[in-house]
Length: 189
Image 1: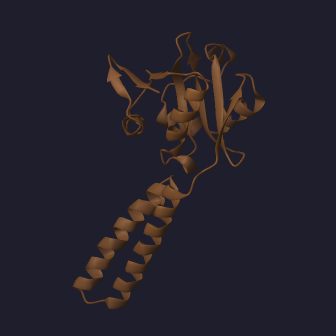
Image 2: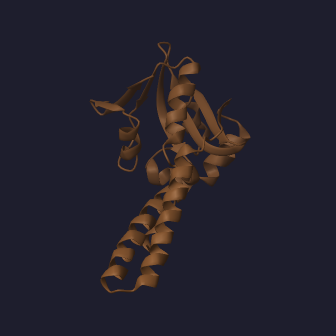
Image 3: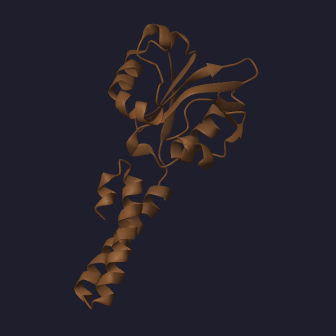
């Protein structure tokens, strides 16, 4: 249960906390500590209820296309730079020269608040070569990726590619069914 509080994602916190509650409940039953077992059963049920609610409550995402020199985008990139570096090590977005290589920029919002950033280059054939597909910790439940799969198609994008670092991004790529070919991950929309 202690490990659950190290999670940055509320969704992951609830999953790990539920597992801890169930384990502690079983232990309490083994040692005949019924009040402790009941308390942990209640904690597990509360976590399951919130997990269900998180998965079944529709989030109102919006895709906002912005220019690469947009001040809000720059502020968001600066504020999230440490977390972005964790998931995309070596990505260079700090200088004007680095940003010049970016042609397509989106901010994903949820109820008007920033939830994610997509940076890349759109080709003539409708491919978006993503340099960054970042979700803020609060929104790391794969719902943004599912939203993007639908919404980017409406923007005329038929295929996504990603060739950046994958060490801390692999679960996301797998969950959204990206296929790897020669070190490049791609997904048709």
